[in-house]
Length: 429
Picture 1 (cartoon, helix red, strand yellow):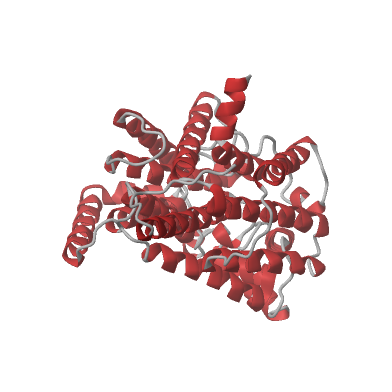
Picture 2 (cartoon, helix red, strand yellow):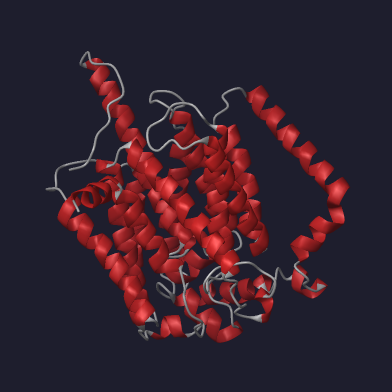
């Protein structure tokens, strides 16, 4: 029992994060699209709330510390503002129960990000990434062993597991592909678990299988862009970056020449020309979304509204675009706060040093890649503009990771000034 408790204490961050991933995204039964916003409760909804409640209880009981005067890093400060705007929007939402549940979940997620900033060490962060790899690989293997029946005609032939939407499964796999790719290609010393390279290669192959089978075009594009960004982010020379870009363009051109038609057939997913020109009805949805924004432009319709009103009107849940999703739910005020949150995070990541901590390039590549996946995929899904999904969860965790690195770098500089150079690793209580 003591060993189990010690293991759980060591792996607190991946356990908290995986509880939130599973709680918000993993669906184990078919459900009417309108059931989520209706406020109806069943066993699995109660399980979701219980998982978030367990994370909140752990953070409060085991990780909370007395408040002290401290300056929040800009990304976390804007993240707090974003969650406050979400909470205030409850006064507008037509789906109060659904919106309140999502608001509480976002508050728990914010609390986790703040705890990561103040108390995590880099070993915790890399254990989080490894735990995510195992979650996705286990899910893909389960989906292979127990094929899931399609939830609609549009999902026929698309891979997933349990009752998770294939698009969401694709996002999970895209993120896992990026993480596995970084660990395969960046083999230098770093904190955290260090598995043999062949294990990372196996996890990469499994995640690629899931990504390919999900036929999630936004996630696929995000994975390709993320692999490139993760590679470029660790290169200092502008010349070398140009060479990498030219090499990528050459590989893409050769792929089109050798297998152009199969690639087009894969991306088409058997859809008609009309479906393709409307981006699978997204342009119709976005036209309706612009009308909704025009009706309530300043404060929006309230958290969760984009999930409910679009299902009611055209049968699609969510804005299928992170900017539209945020604008419909939170209005231009909320969209501005969200844009500051995203922009400050991207800027801080881009200016993160390449030296200063052992294996910092690995962290830099992971953060650049994770942000690229969720932002590119968010052009075609709710992404980080939504609430309580894999993209928003990873975005907040990435903010906590980024701020944790900033803290460790500052601690190291302070330690060097005091005459004790070297990497300082802090652990929580």
